[in-house]
Image (cartoon, rainbow, N blue to C red; front, side, top):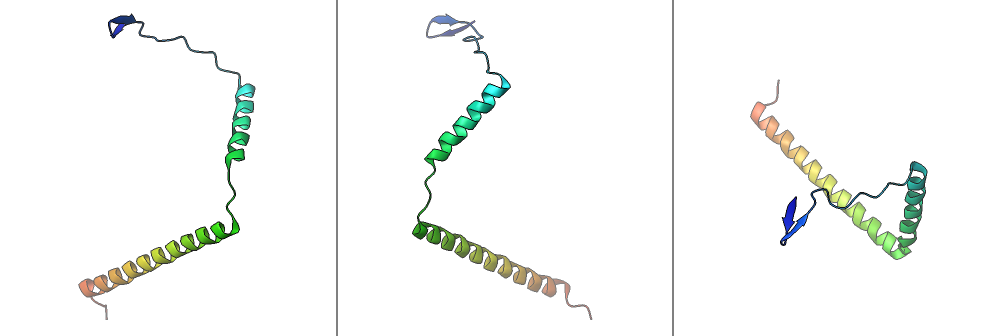
Length: 85
């Protein structure tokens, strides 16, 4: 027993509702999927071009960053360990 605000409440809480069977849950899931798909807004052509440009720009920046770090680490490794010869 737990006391909340001076009242005694059973520890178990409210009785659980019975779950629907597997097929009913699948049907509910499919209905929810279609309900969510109705909420999807397709971007306009202008928005799609803008989003694509942003993604490609980000990818180019990240590629340049990784390339720069690679060149830096190669240079540091060459300075520290020398060139075998």
